[in-house]
Image (tube, rainbow, N blue to C red; front, side, top):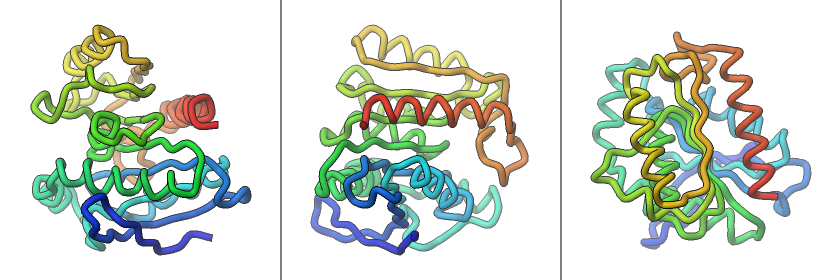
Length: 222
């Protein structure tokens, strides 16, 4: 059963989260699920629940501390106000450490804003074992992707105006040059194609991206 949860950040502060375990319980590998700009809503909880059904412990740090956005304008405002450095090095890393403390390997899976933070976690959370990002990519000033030492996977829509293909290809080229283990997948779809509650949902692309994500996590976390 899902529960409201708390974990301790590296700076000693506590942070709230949504948590769910699979039938295997605390011995299962873990995944830190990182929210879109909406906050922890029903859709992102369903992602965590699906991961639990697939055999993973899933922890969703509440980056907005209980707040949720009801429309795109409010979501953009909340995302713009988020301290991404603090979120990556404290909330995401703390969530990774929390899952890791029970044993086993731990990955991240993030969407949009959470995809950005999934890559930042790969740069700044040394405890992490693998990272998956759906349609999210950090800006150049956020860190050097060449420092990543874990396998990473990305899913991007070719119609995505927020993270256009040219920028994705440039980011991937840096991973390639640094010898980072990675796989990027491109879909004939717009941004947020995996969110079944949003206007641009593409069921076929979302299904394929989910299957690839689970295969990647199975390979690197089990």
